Image 1: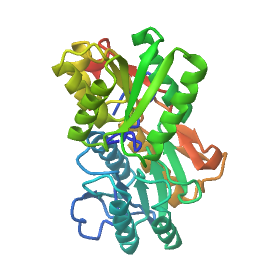
Image 2: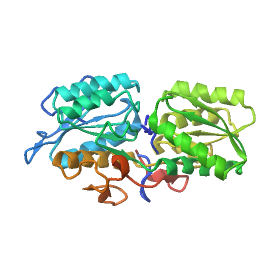
Image 3: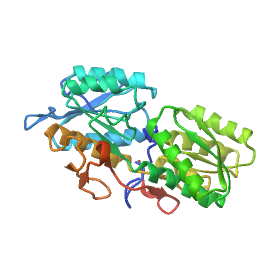
Image 4: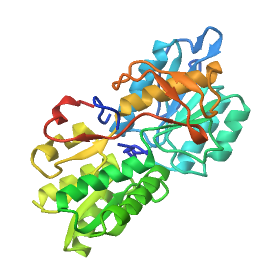
Length: 351
């Protein structure tokens, strides 16, 4: 994400071992801004040329997920390429989808920057025989073949508010520092959080939702503005790896009593967890998410799944030890439940 990640990232939850945590043709030259590697792209006559298209490049969350996807792809004899825009925009992703289609990729695994804007390009890719897996952040269900979800929308929203409620005594004003206004996963988590708060924590008031656009400086500035606008603010929830790290840096520099949680990259958050700025935060294992995305692409290429509810697929090497997954309603494949990071476990996670 930049969790966006959520990408929905920082989407932000695998089992007990969880934590935080592409791919087009092997014969084509690497697209500018991307990287490639792997074998021939063909195994047993299958086109295992699989491209990962994150929301943007240079995001630690997607670096982790995509490298793990590369390992899975190379493990079953495919070729890997990662391509993507420098900024998290839908227009930037569209151009890469079109290029990968022209290059006859076997599959594209992407974290969508917009729920609607990518659908036309994805439709052309599918018409050309390219399988399309979304992960971390989805498009409309009718656009792609399957969506690999880190967790359920409801569990992600609830977990963040449960952590915040614990820190502020279930009472007070809270703000949300989100990614971009069009990030589908972020918006869904935030909506679920708001509904859950209204029913579970009536004394907590969500006073604002602001957007840092998965940019470090913008997120830092939005944090400063929130504290200025709401001097009695008790907490900030940031469901994005970029946003929570930037907010933590600001609060830490000011020795602010405002509480902070959300979805974060463990490696970025170690300092702030240990000094008490962020006692707890959540995420999923982006490495597991990347691997599951790769195996979902393989299953689509093999024809063992089509995106129909009840389809079964196999995956290997996930930290939660799960090897079989079932396609749910609307073609959704769910990785697992949320995981909470704190002082007791933060040092175990190096990605």
